[in-house]
Length: 384
Image (tube, rainbow, N blue to C red):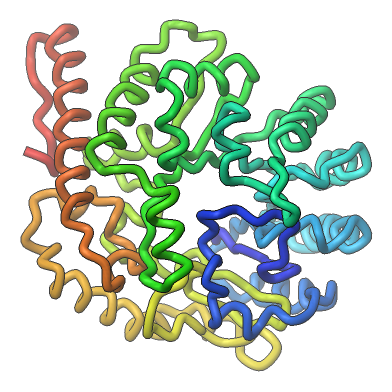
């Protein structure tokens, strides 16, 4: 299981214009008034013993999870070690998704002690990053984040990155965008396309300010894909997870990204808030109750049971039906098969066309490679 743990709820020292939670996310906010007690970890660990899965990753997420403090995180590391020593059949690992602003040598020592997988949010070159990823005073955060990535690397911790692609990203060339990560040895990135799902006033303003035109975005993605696919510098590859997962899905393998699984993965990456409330997903979805239970009140194995997710999945399927997704040729490969989009009141038809064109482009590129090697096109199990 991959478990999102939000020890400080949605608290964050940044004020990014495209933040998922710009509208406040009332469902999550209701359960995020205080910091998580370290004692809650013992309850979660007891729950792990009752689950059939024996491999678990706890990812500290936010908001900004490092705001929980070093003492709490060090205690978490000690609890993981103790649990692992006492339960040989269960394997735990730790990860953290951070905005990178608070990292110092003491944090790095904690990360190394806990064998954390570290991912930092950075959108690329300074001009892109500082246009949207700002602090509460409106100042750009690039220098602080970039310097802390270099600090991590100096201690042989090479973080991956999440990079949001917005209208600002398209102001630099795909070549400059890609080379930024390559030159700075950030060799594993997740790109997240900023496509607003909400319709509130704040969300509509953010959409106008930061969401790229679908056709412009597509041209950027085409070029970025080619830079990734045909990168000849094998000593300094930059893996882009979105592209890797697209190819995996086209070739018939089960992708690990939840929104490429036709809604069936929803709830498989639960999110736990400071008060112990468990959400099926942390992305705001209008009119859908995402709460699965509370680890302080309910049996952990019951909270995460398939039966508990049935009504949630039924609601998602109805959304797919209403949008006509089930009749679409690329439904099983569509990154918009996520309740955040499926159940939104927005019209996403331009991004339906985006997805179809993008997948056809990838298919053509793979066929070109296959023909050059074997003289034959690929017999795709899904996309024909």
